[in-house]
Every structure is written in C-alpha cells, then in structure tokens.
View 1 (cartoon, one colour):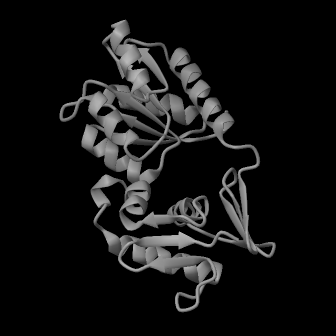
View 2: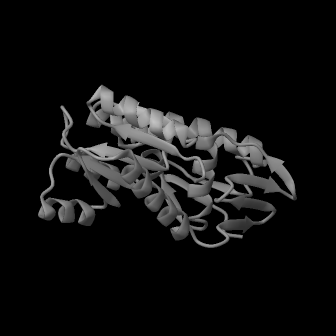
View 3: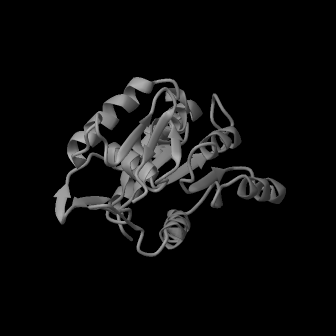
Length: 228
C-alpha cells in the first residue's frame, strides 16, 4: 500500500501505541490525538489521508467529532468502538464514516479495512486530476506544480490552498471557507494566516498583487482564481 498520513484519535494510550507500531510498519506516517477536540485540530493542521476515530472520547463523543469533521473535510474515517449495535453502525455510515471496526479487533482486519478506504479515496479522485490554467500545471495526485515546465516547490498547505482556489477557478472562495478548509473551523477568523499564505503563493507562482494574473482579491470577502 502507498504510504499515507494517518491520524489516530483514541483516548487509550496502549491502543494508540499498538496502532502506531502496526501502521508505521506498513510505511504510514502517524499522528495521534487523545481527545475529540485535539483530533479535530490535528486533522486541520496535518491534513491526514485517513482518520481512525474512537467513539468513546473523554470530551466529545466520536459521532460529534465526525459531524464536525464533515463540516469542512471529506477525509476517510474508520470508526473504532466497543459498541456493536447495527443501527448505530448504519447511522455512523450515513453520517459520513467510511467503515467501522468493533473492539476488540485484529490488526489484520483493521489494516485490510484501512486499505479499502484508501483505495476508495484514490478511485474517487477524478482520473487525471490535473489542472492547466494559463502556464500553470497543478497535479492533485502527485501534489506538484509547474510553470512553463519548470517545477515550483510549495509547502503542503501552500499546495492545499492553491488547489482549493484553482479547482474553483472563476468562483469566489470566501476567506472563511478557505481558512476552515485549510486550517479548520477553529481558525475561521484568522484572516492573517490566509493573507500570509496568499502572499507566499503569489511570490512562488510569479503573481503580482497589483496586477494579478492568477489570484484576484475580492476586498474583505475572499479570492478568485483565474479561469483561463
């Protein structure tokens, strides 16, 4: 399986350690959180490719964490729980979880379920998810950017912001929507984050704020990426 960034949200340290060892042995990169709020923040800051989410958290029920995640992210979520009620499983899947594993579980089963949701995520990415806008080429699958064939090196969040704007080319992306999508709901009012990253992006792709070619500012509202 291709290595992926995995976030574990579970209040039991032994389970987190057990999962970390197994996942890192498979080549994955692991982040841990012991509470629901910490999990939501970690999801915003680390942009995982899958979340393993326990339902029995000390501060927020896992269902509430899933609900909050789904307000701004479609990251695949694998639920862990001692609760085996079929109706609850259906409700969680309907609420946006991709799969459900009941504790106690075998690591082989969990890894197989994880492979399944990561495959499903890859399959759901549009074939050839490459945007060509003017002389910029933006490849979602490889997370690479080029201008006239020359590579442009972006950080993870710079790429995420560029992709968000470019995949909505011609449409206004509000400041709040961009902040929530990239940094999470806790940062919806932190417009300074966005201004800094927009400035960095413009520098790297060769855009002039005074005479923009790619990123257009709608003062006090948000940003609009060129459509051609």
